[in-house]
Amino acid sequence: MDARILKQVHQSRNASRQEIADGLVETIVQIGGEPLTVRRARDELSAVLRKARNGIPQLIGGPKTNEDMAVVISLKDLAELVIAACQGDSLGEALDAIGFKPYPGDRIIVGQGRKSELGQLVRRDPARRGREKGSEP
Image (cartoon, rainbow, N blue to C red; front, side, top):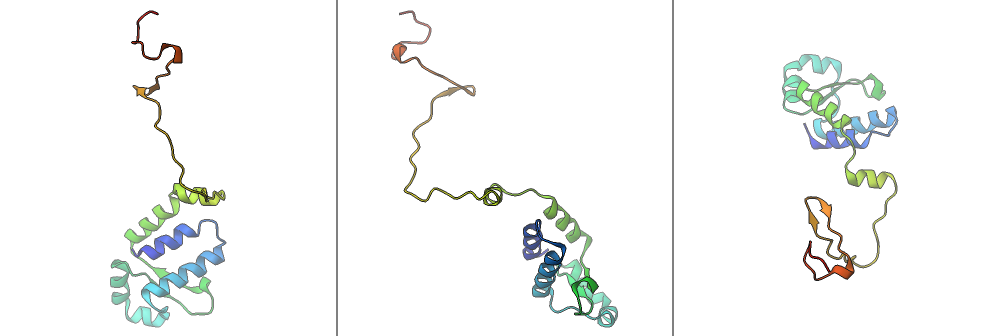
């Protein structure tokens, strides 16, 4: 399946049905060409199915409205679309959604973290610094 369709599906999660349909029609036309008439699709059904099986979706229907069109895709591509639609946002997309803006200033220098033992922080008492662990004062 062409990555442009997956991108379109992923970007359309919060769009209206009409916006989703318009975006998909535009993307599919870029990939597979202009919509076929029902008569032409019927006459060339083998070619339509071959293209769909090779990952090139085929639009069939009149140009009146997007609701009158049908799409021919392979079952494999349909499964990919379902997976793409169900996947959650990436970290970057989630940050964009909440309006996160990166720090615009200079580089941020982060100091070395504390040592850890088996996943727990080792906190040292400044008064005991330099003494071995377990020794008495």
